[in-house]
Image 1 (cartoon, rainbow, N blue to C red):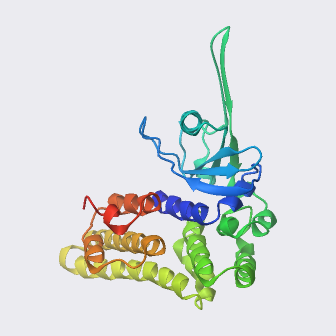
Image 2: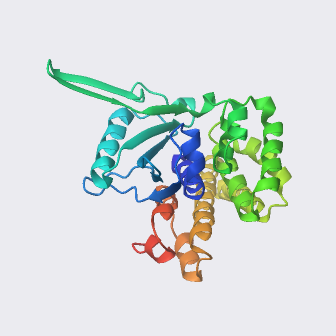
Length: 307
């Protein structure tokens, strides 16, 4: 599931890079260009990289964590050095921890190591704990970071008002496509803190936004299909086994729908061959990997070239 959160976040950065620079507390610029995050000289890829143009241009390196990573400090240092080497510009690294479970001793934002008395390595980067961000700051920020509002410092009882504030801004400032994308991302990210049922209940009021509603009901339909299949198979093979298999099928359907949803926004409508190929993928981790990869390629054919 973490990769679905990654995909939603990366789509928001693609569409609104300046908003994320602002939330990260980094210097503004005259231009913002999301650039290739691949660091294939060594093999890793950073989450998102933005070239910020201006009098003092620099590279903004953004990492997003929804789970603990004991090596985050060292990984950010590695990416920072490689990006500086590749682009020849100063690099400012920021890690967004999306929920408390992402905290770990290895996500401190500081590396200070002395190999000898005359050898010192010191590296610092910014760590932003999303759940500590003031709700009003997020609600007043750019459209691209609005979906973080439910997982900011908002209290559970504030969620209906939060959804209302998001709706108000989208009605006044966003295009229909931007609104649909924002609602979809809000739903996905809300799953970092709340149950799917809570998220669905909160967002039922945005059904007038066709694409966002379709996305929500595709997910719900997948869950219901999984439960139905689990019930049917439980009669034949045992309730426990049927329920487990039904839940797996529901998660697979959800992942397939997520992949098609993101792909449509990026590449347009898929061909019948593409939808058939995706329907035949029964490996959940593979579907999640493809959903994340959508943001780094140029078309459906490239996405499925090895399928």
